Image (cartoon, rainbow, N blue to C red; front, side, top):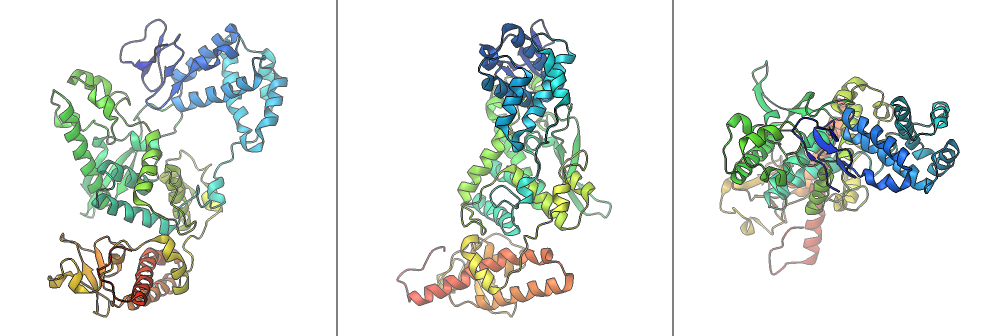
Length: 520
């Protein structure tokens, strides 16, 4: 049957508009409720009597019009699973009780979703519902959905990232962009997820107009983004926002993405838009939808909906693509880091709790309307910033792969070897390597250099001295602040320097080589 198409016209007989502004034909077997979610109503037609199917359709239409597509889809999916279990039998209290036995404690919350559907079905007085079901569900005591298990258990593959993993992801992502392994869109989206911990639906609902640079009361530059709120019951598309501060570096990346979006979109169209209208373009567009716009009138109508925005499911796909491109290894598992948007949310909440912030602040950071679901962070504050000394660094360094540059035999074989200001020196003033970057760099050398793709440490450089200085500084910070978290900012650099120390030792044991080596 015909799929639903985005609707901009008034309601007609047999047609309704979903909560997200999409026009659907009631008699179709598939309703597209948003850019992300479609309901395949036809899947349950053969599992129900005609009367029950009609009642279910009308009830789902109520949810589709008045509640989010995700909520409506969840209700349908849970009821569909129950219908498949029934194998054509009528849905009765006895059958529901049997189905409950197959779920187990972890999935008993499925019945809570079914209860919402059944009770609304009854309130609307639609046909096809066993009258005993409502009384049965009203008396049914159910366990709630278990939340935050990955946080509580510090799951290495699903839970919050360690400090080394988070810093490693951000560093290697930028390096991958500089070397052409990831696009500006992949860089911008991944960095925005990493820095804000926002949900995929929030990330993909952003527009160019949401980016802002201003001046604070202290006269300093202030960069921010208006982040659309997500997962709020009964909330229309881009109705409410929370302003999130951005670093200058992240703002620069997002501005570059905005420039790319405008240039690409305008190249697709045979018409021109004003600068103000161009700001209504999504920060992360659905390019197939963008290319279908043929005139300004159509653009004005379409931007009232989410049709031009990237489907939120693509966020996790992009994160996975980026992870494969950068090949980042977790120091905890020794395997390629497994990433999803929710892991960055867990990381943000965990780090905030570790810094001593209370439930109200954490709820604000995570875009929660209340504090009922932030207790998992407060009650279970993990200490990822573990003690790191030279022995531990030697064990972790091969896994963390923090060093990104190329070891050279001496200055004579380095890029920019003839430029005096290219030398990178230790704190004591001894030359440790060469900077191979021709652009301006304001980094506080030599510490950031060891994780930079442009750094060329010399085989006989004082790298052990740099490592000892870093370890001493880490200990000093802990003694002064009594806070391992503060000192942990040095951890990835410590691992990188240790990696160089060990690699140089191995090279020297191999003896002279006929050609200068490449990257580790």
